[in-house]
Image (cartoon, rainbow, N blue to C red; front, side):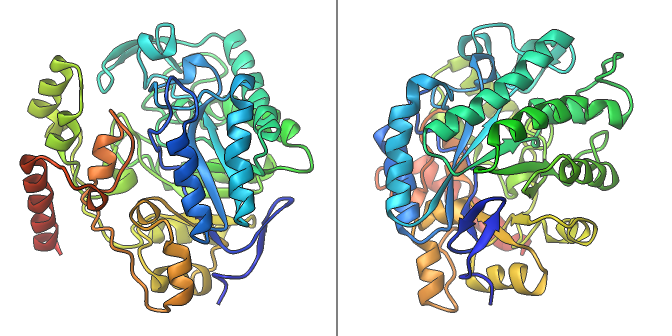
Length: 409
């Protein structure tokens, strides 16, 4: 049984094979860390995880989607150091996901017209988008390296480069969002150019003492996006570029958001917390069409992930639908993956790892109604089972989703 054995990500040794995934917490304030963010990650470290990952940290202002997101810059090194010191005190390692949201933002958070691979309009935000110039791309690649150096100063052991889910690097990789006619567009080899430049800066900055994970798609999850063969090519390139481990995921936030998480998006819960009336009612009217459901099942990425395990030699992190000790053992022992990542399970039970250690048949209490995901766009991520003052209409929506999920199964 590998679950509770030590393992390495590059130069970093984890006490076991579990990682808290970079599921966006929504616990920052004015792009700075907070006590709530610290307390949550310390609870997961105390709960036995091998490494916990702070999510979705922007490398610069134009990278930011939310005010509750971290902007990884020297000014927040000291409060981040409090978090990493606390994580280390419980025996866990600390990682931070770095990325750029590209076209998934607004002028109010990015401080400029949103930028992306190609000029156009992002209906999902909604906003106009300006295509990045060659010089800007070179500068952004350098900022990825700067973010790694800041992460080291803040005490992080690893960084996770976000190259999936339809954010900026992924926007260059996908033909859906990359319609450029220069050396950054066209063939897949050209579309990987920006990723290569970012990886070169990240690996240089990581040096010999930091682990580098990359979150990459196995499919974009919709017709016209990347499919398995192209994503395997991307993964092989990341292996060649020196990544210490790959996190195998899928989905595209502006086209197939529930492909990432599976299940149904609770639209009323999402809009209940939105302050803008136009957005609140727009999403209520059209949300079901913009965010179609994708049925949840345990280990929902496993079939695709097996193909990557067969083709790649570096450590691979499985994420997607791990809810029990049985799931964890299957992925690690029977399927040959090196690590597992969990998000919703560790929000529902921050001590899930310790409970798997102590109870061989333990299964977490997450019911995957995605209330936690729905509210993170406006406030901190939270499991509905931990809250006691939810409005009756939200409670009804949660019960209805549970019923529909049982009917599907």
